Length: 198
Ligand SMILES: Cc1cc2nc3c(=O)[nH]c(=O)nc-3n(C[C@H](O)[C@H](O)[C@H](O)COP(=O)(O)OP(=O)(O)OC[C@H]3O[C@@H](n4cnc5c(N)ncnc54)[C@H](O)[C@@H]3O)c2cc1C
Image (cartoon, rainbow, N blue to C red; front, side):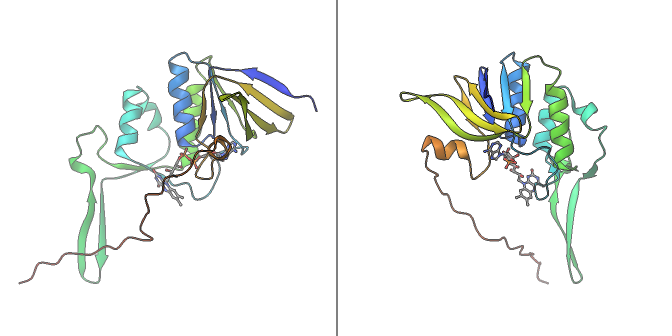
């Protein structure tokens, strides 16, 4: 199959929340960009469905919060837990100094589709689904692009800026020879209710 070559100012590997949001922000600023996402759509299990007040604040700052909240969602302002007869508040978002003092429950694919729809309003926004990044293109010691496999054949993207947002097993990171700094994380968390004596 013939290989296709395109040039953009920034190419982002991975169409998760990080890659799509970055693409949207760049396209808004007039930067020609391309997101390459290996899956055909955003319909995946295990990618979460809570949108936190800080994310909603960003949607507000982008001027799209009202439109965004037209999508079906549930608002949670407080989370309570019960152990036997003991009921207590685990989280209370109602005091946060933000516009939305709640967590919105919405499938991540709705969120990502919304961001792509927003991005598509800008002429410099491009996304290719079914495009799996396989390697970097190097010129001497510089990275000047990346290679991807698509259903219609190999794709070569020439760009001065490559961003690896292609998850924790990042191909971009591996091919760039970057090492991971482990901070360690506990295997689980324990909720310890504090009970007043007397
Ligand atoms: C079970 C679970 C539940 C979670 N629940 C929540 C929640 O409720 N709320 C919340 O805020 N966060 C939640 N998180 C965390 C949240 O999912 C992550 O913080 C977020 O997805 C990270 O975004 P990202 O864009 O960095 O990476 P990812 O979401 O991992 O996206 C990376 C993207 O890159 C693509 N990709 C990978 N390799 C390639 C390649 N070679 N070429 C092209 N594309 C590639 C992948 O297909 C993927 O779409 C949850 C995480 C898990 C595991």
